[in-house]
Image (cartoon, rainbow, N blue to C red; front, side, top):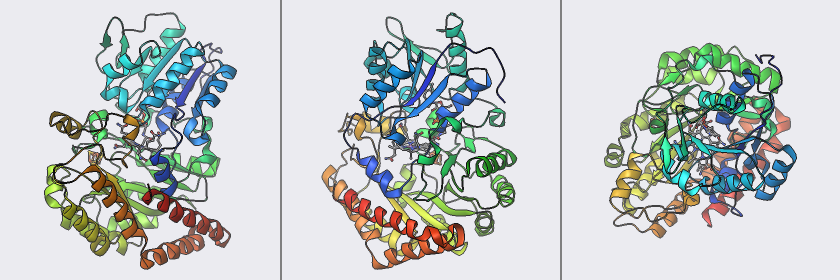
Length: 488
Ligand code: B12
Ligand code: SF4
């Protein structure tokens, strides 16, 4: 509910920065999986600001609009914001710094960064952004941003806000801001400020969106940025609130497909069960969720299917138990096999997400993982990426300490470029083996037939006949994009 305060002056722009590269490999990957999701973090920040009376807020998702830096400059000239807040992941860090520079050239008074990269690397972010970045927000930032904007507007000192870092003579880091104790108390993300018709989930021909149902994760997989960012405490939203959001999206925004992209959607079976019951009351909604292989039995998976779940995205990581143990994934090959059997029995599609290149990986372990995926797990889709040491993770710290990080250009930290050099496996070999994995998995007559049959089944069951032609085109485009990916 927007409070009716007198119109306030601060003009706010929340930004997904434009890319300074001509094309990035992650773009190919996104095109292949046809997955583009809204920047929900910016949506939550905007919603909290709106709730507190700030009405001059825009979100510019340069990726969704495929904007160039010059397009963004023109946008700044037209809108003339007082505050630009830039979403900064590791692979778009240089884009974010460039966007900050353009903002300063266009005389924006305050420019801030927020998100995963500045949280993990606050000194570097401030030093490289010197003169262009006034402050950065570390971690969850709805309320620190609100406090900043309020103080800035009232001309008050903002340098004591918790969770921020800023430059004096050297970088200054305030203590972390407290985590939001009850996520149900947050307003829904301000999707009305986003180009909702531009987001696609696995090629769905309908308007689609992502939803976050919890934050944080009690596991501590070595490679994962999430637990380092949000902490080990898992904070769920209630099934009722999630169902309310889904219903709102279905009724008000004509959304038919949603993806639950939590750090850990699936911790409590009871919650997922209750959520499935709630979601099954909503007509004509299809969803997918990310999960670990040790969560949910056949009964629960079947219930999810009945409630509209069609795709389960499983973090498999490796088909080698020694590697799984080493990265502290805390799953076993047996659990993973049983899980994929159960997904199949429950008649849902599965996506196995695999990362090559953790310590201990060799040509043989990669090949045996691919064999195991194809012959034993037999998922509907597979995503093969390269283990990437994101700053702030255990994996990064240990690779750094061993001198194994061979690439400093953050734009290459996109999961498809080899960043580390392992003993016994060159970076070129890792690239080739990944391409081969895609070819082996997708270029099988059985897989092509299966995927086509799935499209037909979905068309009939979920979309209606009229969508079949469209879906086939999307699928064909996927195959073409995959060819581009494997030819890089
Ligand atoms: C959905 C998603 C996407 C979507 C949409 C991304 C987007 N624009 O937000 C798509 C598919 C496009 C995407 C792409 C990629 N993603 Co992604 N993605 C996610 C995912 C699963 C959910 C994001 C989300 O909605 N979070 C929920 C909201 C509420 O949280 P939030 O975004 O973090 O925002 C909060 C804070 O971060 C902060 N904040 C964030 N931005 C800003 C900006 C300002 C100004 C302020 C003040 C605060 C602030 O405040 C917000 C509210 O508290 C996360 C994992 C996760 N669970 O977070 C990975 C994640 C963010 N992605 C990641 C990666 C690596 C990628 C890709 C490289 C993958 C690839 N090769 O395709 C690309 C890179 C895209 C790019 N150009 O940089 C990593 C980032 C790691 C890192 N250190 O940077 C994550 C953490 C996954 C992981 N476990 O490693 N991704
Ligand atoms: S990979 Fe999944 S289970 Fe592991 S720490 Fe990250 S969010 Fe948690």
